[in-house]
Image (cartoon, rainbow, N blue to C red):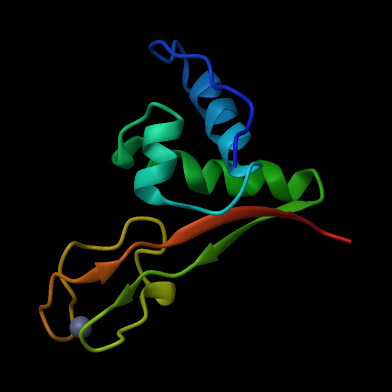
Length: 109
Ligand SMILES: [Zn+2]
């Protein structure tokens, strides 16, 4: 799916970065890695922005939907902890095969 182009260049302020991220989220469902690439942010920055974004979306009648990360080895569900930035290793079985969380924006009706 081809969407609106995101302006390239260093994010001057966090508000700008957050807007870029929001623009990406409105185009579909993306993993953390896809969000970071499309918004030109590090995955760490994306993880830092998401909780703020979630709050401002809620104020506009929208919500951030998170498909939680999951361990591919034992099916451990990360929805209760580290929702935005799950650890690289499963706390239950120590496997490093973690499926990335996926994110999208939905409008509340
Ligand atoms: Zn596991």
